[in-house]
Image (tube, rainbow, N blue to C red; front, side, top):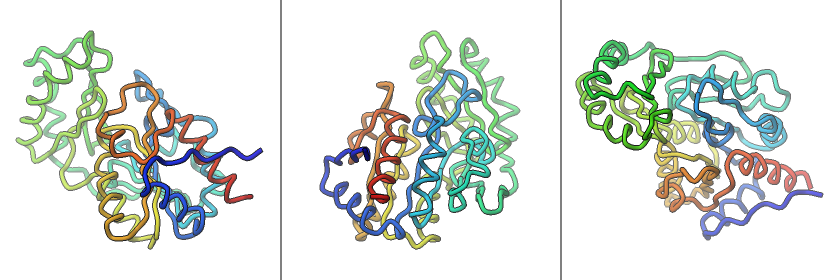
Length: 282
């Protein structure tokens, strides 16, 4: 029996879902990775997409204009952790890594990326000293995102939120000194070049594909920029469905308030993709 698609609780969401189902060949499905296709885990290096994620995308993607994953991770890492390479049916999939600074296309299997920002190298060299001065070493750790961003995680600290708040301003000052910005997430502060975010990446990808409707699913503060892009496009007459992946109780309220539909974490996102594929196959 085909799974039932959950009903969006807003008129805009209902209209966008109707548009996707009526004209899937004009639609793009865009998804965050961590917390949306892959469960959040204490060590991000251990994160993996749910086993059904690639299968669900492979069922749905051939019916769409395109499918895209937009993540703060390096594109190649997201491809490996998602198991997306070489999957039949995913030839129209793209992965935009580092918030769009990198791109992997399934058809070529190659990652395209600009030169690393020198500000990231400078921040990396000073970051350990900054954490030491703040007294925030215990329980925090640094993630080097391939020379294009550096992230400080506080999830393992004795009080993750207190460590997060203590680091906000010192890391903002460090970022500003080297021409970078700080992107906050759930117990993580990422220092990266300005002018690149999920909203910009999504807008440019939709313009490239000529999509007439879009579904975007995300779970954290970094996804708000993509939500804002979808909201702006809706004002211009492009239907858009905003989905919040909400599994752990840590999903920001601001994201939930803007979403047309909330589903129970990555399991709910995969189930939603499968339900849409079922509806298009029926």
